[in-house]
Length: 328
Image (cartoon, rainbow, N blue to C red; front, side, top):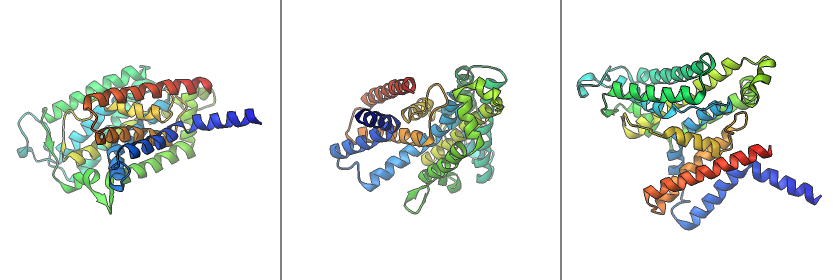
């Protein structure tokens, strides 16, 4: 009986380790800083985490397929630039920028979403049809999408002043910021897709054992391509939100953001080898990252030291991920 209880406790601790860490982390920061657990700061943590959580959810789909998407940061920047640039008037921008089409705000928001999804599909096509390793294919897209952003903007900041454009980043519904509401809505839809549909079952099967999934009749190529399309779409949504929060599109936006998205997924329990992970875990991982940044700022920790601490947390998460994968 004692052995059984120890095994049960250990399995629970492994399964909910990220949630337990987040709770302990919140308690520790609440004791270290009286400002941390205030309602306004908790809402601020949710707002700061929302974009990372949305992009990381897309990353989780790519990782579940036994792949990775290194292009999400560049797709965030390109989508942001397109949304601001398509709505801007050409005579308001510096020479050298291709932006400034003066389109209605709704079109300026929809077209970047289509571009983000298309770039994700291109990633998937290169991996499935071209048989290019995910690391190489998405690294190439990282460079290409960043280059397109610089060409389109001419290297200039593109202002976004239309309230329709900025609503999704800077607006609110009641006391809740729009990005937080979008994060909850997207999580609900993607959770249903992953946990309650045949596509989700096939995605886990492909990531767990590709040959077995193929022999079972799963359309492996379509599943992988869809996973990368979702990743690109989530990155585009993240770019539109950031554009709204900043009231502008910046060509160097989200540099290195792909590393934060990978870290959030891994901290939340998504396996580096595919087939294991949940969106709930990814959300928790994103909140751990957001809480870490918020807490370190409240404690006035040096920004350079913050990067060291974040790197250490990520390394611990990877080590724990590898440990639990071997145990399973």
